[in-house]
Image (cartoon, rainbow, N blue to C red; front, side, top):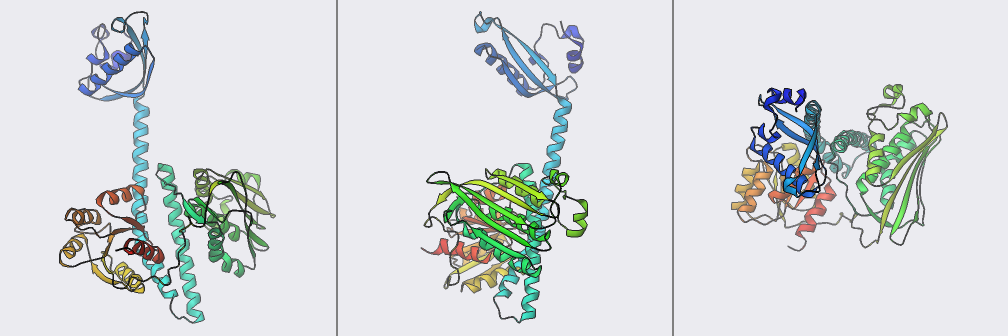
Amino acid sequence: MVNQTLAAVFGVPGEAIIGKTDADFSPRPEEIEAFLLDDQEVLNSGKIKFIPEEPVTDSNGQQRWFQTTKIPLQLNLPPKKRRLVGVATDITHRKQRQDKAEQASLAKSLFVANMSHEIRTPLNAIIGFGDLLSQSSLNASQRECLDNIQSSSQLLLGIINDVLDFSKIESGKLEMENRPFRLEELLEQQRALFARQADEKGLAFVLRRDPRLPEAAYGDVLRLKQVMTNLVSNAIKFTHRGTVSVELNGEYESHRQCRLCIEVTDTGIGMSEDQLANLFNAFTQADVSTTRRYGGTGLGLVISHQLTELMGGQLTVDSEPDKGTRFRVALPLTVASMQDNTGSQEMAHLSLEGRRILVAEDNRINQTLIQRILTRFDAEVILVNNGQEALDACWTQTFDAILMDLQMPQMDGFDATRAIRMNGFRMPIIAISASVFADERQRAERAGVNAHLGKPIDADELGRLLDNYLRDC
């Protein structure tokens, strides 16, 4: 017998189906092969098989999707004489909705990636030239203007990073690092970023570290700093008088394991229970009026919450209206020795004198910026505008290293690097890109780059990379 639903799917009368198998109705060989292999597996093993989704092409050539369970019968007989029954549910509409959602998510991720690239390129110049200018002699008024430019640039970069990280977390593409760092770095960064801001608001800004904590630990220090920066930034933003404190506490769980507790406490406006309920929802503020009064995307706390969980920890909050708020980050860390910690090296005396560096970059402003940075380290800089010019230069000149922008006209950095390697050139190549997605880094590594440096460029990090690769050459 046959039910009318199956007959309607295949578009044939019921009597035409009796006596046949599902493999008899699909015109696609790959579908038929999959049906028969699944059947044979169930008959041979005598075990039930659940197939979450399988394609079946109907009589009109339209592919439908089914969720199927195949159950063996007559297990007392040899496998060749057994039978099976299949229970299939048509999930075509669900599959179509899922595919549309994935396509929409991909389109959104691509849009965010492109926007990030376009914004980071000019922002790279603003931050980079600001850093270079900060090393020159300025009067008090000029220094104040520059400080405002730098703080606004960092704020804009933080917003871009929040949106980008939210997109990465949604798509499951955010990668966590695990390298040694000094715990004191966490407080040093908060002091550098917010001490002046707190002082301008008349707030006491207190930073403490429990001396019983280890000096160094393994973890993703950049993400940890990002979480702390979001929490401290909010604390100062929503506090008009009193104190903002940042404390590092914790305890050893074993000789090599500790549990770090970061507490950010303020005496600010606080939150009600209803406001706390929506605190970790994306693109929301505790109170809609805060958007108008204080600004912000509503992403900082939700990203901090998600990043903390990705690092294996927990982010909790206690708050009362008009009394203040306390955020608490608790996460496990592996203890590191100070010898393991290579995160902070003194760059003031680094010299690349006598080194010839080829820079392939199509943006004139970024060319000037990179040239200024490398000149600061006494390197000789040769500039080209695209990958083809970089490849041509390798045939006529000798270089100690190449800085390769990945997105360029005529020949991009991927093809240029691949061609340089295929022609036998072995100098270090450092990729520079405004895109920070892992798949681009992997693609660049496959092409033959040695390292990847994201924009905005950190001058010290660039110098450190070149020094590491050229030290023994």
